Length: 219
Image (cartoon, rainbow, N blue to C red; front, side, top):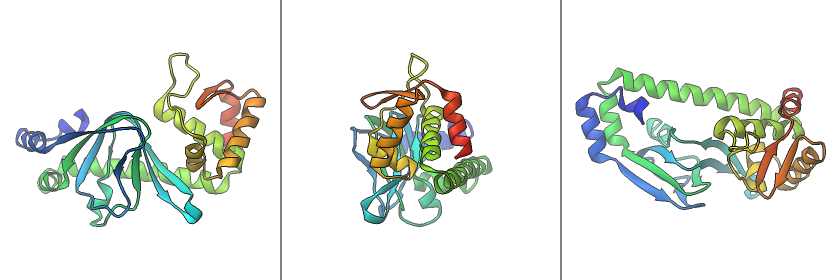
């Protein structure tokens, strides 16, 4: 939280520290649900969290995936509306929660804090715009390749320098790639048979990153 903490005054730091709580979420526990009141600024301290919306026919579309240390859950509050998404822990996660009432009070006289949230929102909007184009205009192979690279860029690689450091279910991978689970399974299997990735359970090891980038680029 240091990037936000450093732009607070000493008094504001005291107010934030006095009001924050740290919550533990087990794997698949809900952090917040669509329709809930957005009462807290949330910061993922450890673990992984997915933010998604349920669509037609019960299919879910993953909108964002969070990594430490990122802030989330505040956009709805700034827009004076309930949550339009749901957040669930991919794995055990610790989340810091600061009441939005405290955050709003600080924003009322701290321009640097306002600018911080503007930058965060602008960055998220840029990523979302880019993702929308890819998920709506690319073919299935391009969408899945883009998602695998997105996961690599977000969470990095394990010690072997090849395995993406998150173990997603095929359903979640499909939700991230805007496709059915069966299409995700089939396309991932094709990538494996082509020597682009190797699979072991939910672990995905990138073998030929340049080819994966090429597939993502041409769509």
